[in-house]
Image (cartoon, rainbow, N blue to C red; front, side, top):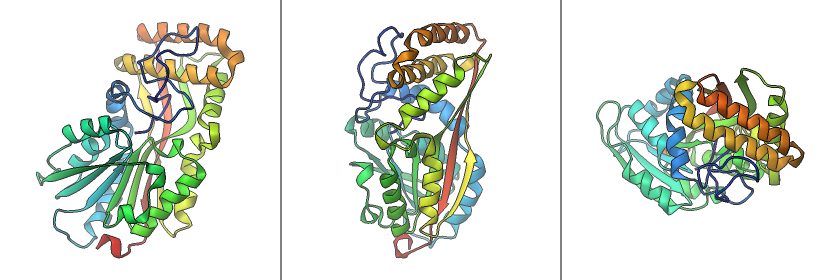
Length: 307
């Protein structure tokens, strides 16, 4: 599973020196990701509320038009984490479904399988299997027979080459894709603060480190799929955080500011004051945050892989 915003990566147990600590394993670093279940738990409700339900009707229509198969459509959830995408989507679709949960972390795969939904919207059976592996090495063969590929907060932590490979794999399998919660590079905070823009800019730079797409991911993915003749629809999917989301907001703030300081060390002293002010406002119920993301629905040309 991959983060929408400062995320649960395999990280030191503290934020950069001088900034308040975050949940262990939830601080942004350039290391390969491993995601803390605590962070995934915190964000699951906000993710579910943010995902663009406007894309579900065209997805349902696409799935309904596929040839019938025993067990229903096969859904591959990439970077599944603890399985929140399946818990959100499976109960919103009618009919039997078989989910294949992919992640590199066996610990998270265990969580995902144990908490997987068992019933679809109409009460039909939902079955699950898990596969451990590197999402960046996905091939069309791995998606053979897939009806749909899903992912949350995945595209922005891939490189352009990896996104092109994902598009090629989906196109080769002839399956649809619902790719949600990619960072858009914009954050709105109220009340406003003079340092908001500087922190946002530094964080966006951190998201693009080592060739990762970060806020450019949605456009790059749309272009990559379009090159294969796919129909691509995009829709905003912002987190809207208020007083009822104080725990998530505080953790997100620590990661967001910490990543900005890591990217631009000259921000450290003003960022410490900024974070303290923002955390105080959050604790007092005065802070509102909109973290902008985008969702993509991709309808690839069918091949023999979906029959």
